Image (cartoon, helix red, strand yellow):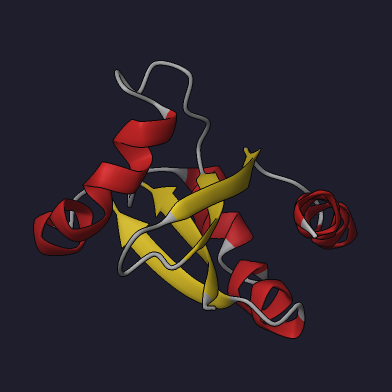
Length: 104
């Protein structure tokens, strides 16, 4: 089964940009596929919108950025958890690992 981290972010978000220096690397080190969805990229956003709206039907509780960890993002997906907002690299790794540990 394919597990992925889907990052929902904005090109205008400074914290989103700061996280981009290590979020993909950390995700891949934990064995996760990394999918970067910028809200301004309408084609990519449309592809993954259903996953985002399952977690946040009106988007009001989203953080910037919002990382959704899920199984099978290309098909019958299952959301395992989330990490919201900006974090130092080690803390981000720990938060992702906690979601993975809770889902096993």
